[in-house]
Length: 142
Image (tube, rainbow, N blue to C red; front, side, top):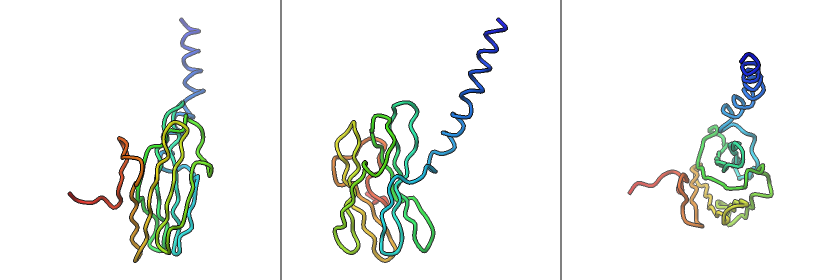
């Protein structure tokens, strides 16, 4: 019985730092992609999944007025780390960009980001919305 308690205690001390560090970084992981805008940055950050889970991707706008969350979605990438290979950006005009997110276990997601007069909008254009995704930022009223 005593060795079982030692094993349980050893397991706790071995994995507790991992659990605490991943819980505390939900929205704070370093950005895996940064898009330069005319007057700021659009940064894509992600949560680290446990095991082979899906990533939650956050779109942060960093501008002269500070930083704010402008969107989020779920990206299924077989638990692999996200990086620049998971995103493609095309500038459509002086104030709009197309952002394509690529996951190993899903169809590509296409987003359109527009920035005018310091206001950002982000809209998912393809494929259809997935559960847990916010598809328009700021949210539109019905």
